[in-house]
Image (cartoon, rainbow, N blue to C red; front, side, top):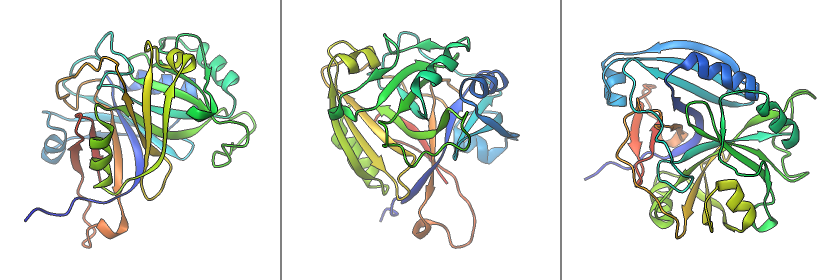
Length: 288
């Protein structure tokens, strides 16, 4: 008889593999105002078993609002981010940074070197049917896709600025490209997430945002018990979805979200056991 699956309570951090954690941290601090909260070393048999790679990793932990980003630099580097990858490819995974003012956030990013755009014509204001948000997608200096996200006026009350000059407020979600919405929804529902929103995004604004010709994408929001941050599934219709081999934890494209168990699922002995899993399309995530 198989054990019951773990039940997710909340998304606690976003984990990126990087070839140079110090340089990556400097970019995130300069571009978004992230704050460095810790630098540590991860190694040993349990870490190697969890990640599936030999050796350890240096980790820099950053905070952005209430959210946490960790930058992992492994002792033995894996593959670089695949060139020519598209938003519709199954390797795609980004996290969306909520901004108080898109114009200011974009201007600030424009003063920082090293990043490359995904969106083809600057920030795009999507129609109400696609959420009515303004968004801009791009890649950091190592190729990780990211998004700046501004909600319609009055729609971001859960993202208060601590100070008047604060532009980037936190992380709303991580989005992944999937091949089959129904299969991925069922998988994550079995872990305790629930569908909180759905939209069918298309049109010229979405095409400019994603740089995908004739784009038609089903967007499904999946929320844990604590709904923010959450997970979004991007299922592109009729677009080429190049499959990718299973990525090692040390590969630059190996982005992970880290979930925390709900109280009902936590071990009663207080021992924290981190579990590594993959979804139907190979996206890795951790449950602690």
